[in-house]
Length: 239
Image (cartoon, rainbow, N blue to C red; front, top):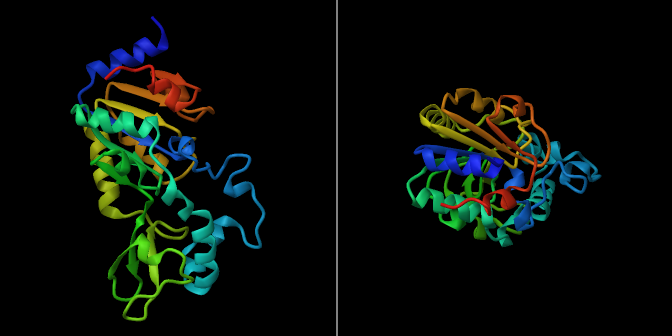
């Protein structure tokens, strides 16, 4: 039996599948992985990307923060869902997918039709005043350096910046999903970003599958492991 046939059987048998994804899920939509050769972390700037996307930079250099944020992060607004996003939305529609736990902030799972998306690192679509907490959509805040609220406060993107903890409620919901899952599919992530990667320790289900172009630290405990493009793997699975 081929590896694809085994994956097909696992998906057919499972009723509570959780998908845990990272940047590799969105690269086919034109959003680069920060850690790729041409990614954000391998480009040269006056300040490192980790600082430009930090809470400290937002607080002390808001103009520079938003210049960087608009140029390097908000490019995702023009991206469209790819086959993996659509596959997972269909899996949810069929009642087999319990949830998607994503490290991405690009909103592409929702664009594809997925409803149960746990965004560990937040979303570019939600923005809040740092002073009065008023909500603003991304259309209002884009291309402003910085965007100001009606109260005079600076509007902060609804993403988790370096130096900030993960959202408590989102984290608890994601952990509960992993505890309940009978199958976990990890896709498009090297599992090097913490604390998000540590959430996988809560999974106690039957099947663990990893789909990532590079090796991960969890490969040795997976029931199936594909070092391949995630779109190409899912294109061979019938729902």
